[in-house]
Length: 237
Image 1 (tube, rainbow, N blue to C red):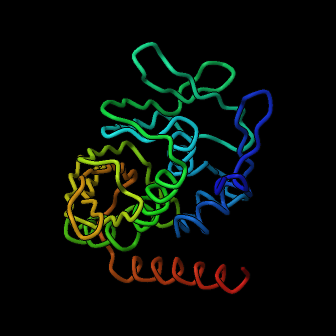
Image 2: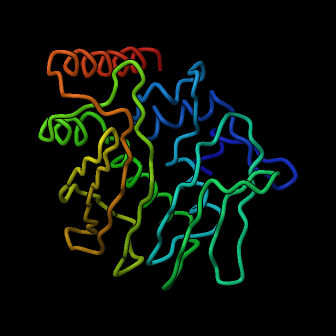
Image 3: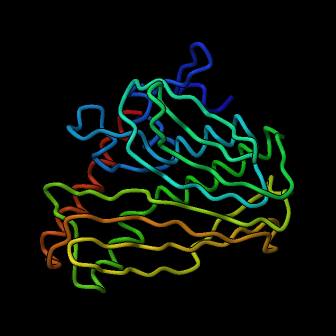
């Protein structure tokens, strides 16, 4: 399976090492958020890796909504639990919930379809910053604290008209940013195409904490550092 390098399985529990999570973020999603670096003080597993593992192990449904409840640290044993109504939850040994997934409609467990869908979506999702989020913040005149950038994956959901998505493309379809004091909520919308025909749509919500007035010089330097990290990583792989 294409995700095998990014987790281990023992006693039916998933365990994700910091290095595995970091490699997934960079290699699969193009996500260079420092919070996914193994040495990060507030390290967390990428939400898109949890998303991908759910699809790989429980299939793709026409309608799915993912609610992220908390940040997963390194080496936390995780279980994907299925309730009677089909709702899925990712929990640790103490019962703490990190992800809740609602699903309905037709479903597929075809690994080719699921891999294609997953790869396309996470490639889109990993472009949060700077591609979509930075212009949104600039428009609102705010930005995160560059010394402690905290952008949290809150939720995402989609509706598919068809599960024939082996040749899927995911395109940006619009965005908005709502400011509430030191906290902001970014909504990124996307459309899904197969063979050039629309087959579905969805959106994801990000929560940005520690907002402060936008400083173009500081943000430009942050973006340049972000791009440098990407270039440096690409050279080493």
